[in-house]
Length: 265
Ligand code: LIP
Image: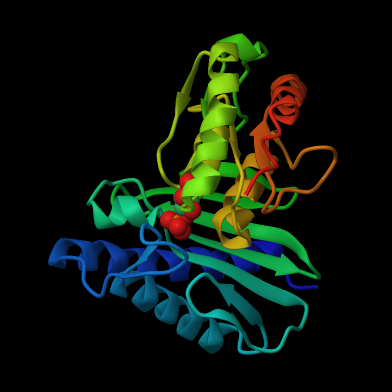
């Protein structure tokens, strides 16, 4: 059984190097901008360069492992370990030189995430977690928010790139805003999940996240004591990711279900 701490150590070393590539390329000026699913779903030369760097480094250290990356998809034979990578989560922030983007790398063993690191190259902030080993921001162990009242909760969220989905998500927001303290939309799911793990958000939800958006940040939040799930008992996934302390999870979950937050386009 590959040791989670060993996998985390490999991930941290690789993400620190890759994060420096992202930071340097940002300073030098973003290039190679293209679009993917819609005209606002961008990918840059840095996204591609960072993913290639991480995949190459993983091949050297663990050639038998599989990798799933946002930009180049799945590669490698799937033994017990699969790496899940978002080379730059928060690509629009990166494009606009807003210092709220992250390299996110998680390690799955037998289909379960056991180690994860999220690093903001612009600030050097780094979050790590291992399954059963806790979640950490730098050297500080994370325990989530003590907030128990939804009406007092600062809730993070995000919106998709498809205009029809954004209209549905705006309707959900309209139905939620009067029930919470306030909303924050920072633009990186991985960093939002880490913010919730550290209590800088009381909770977070978003529809439309891919595995690379939430694999590492979801482990950080879970290991900080948050419930991370979809609606109606579903696991976190494309339909919905909700991350909240146990006392907040049900009221937020129930309100989102009433608003059909996992539905729509
Ligand atoms: C982003 C997510 C964010 C979401 C954005 C986008 P990307 O990922 O991290 O939470 O609201 O629409 O999906 O595209 O920057 O890797």
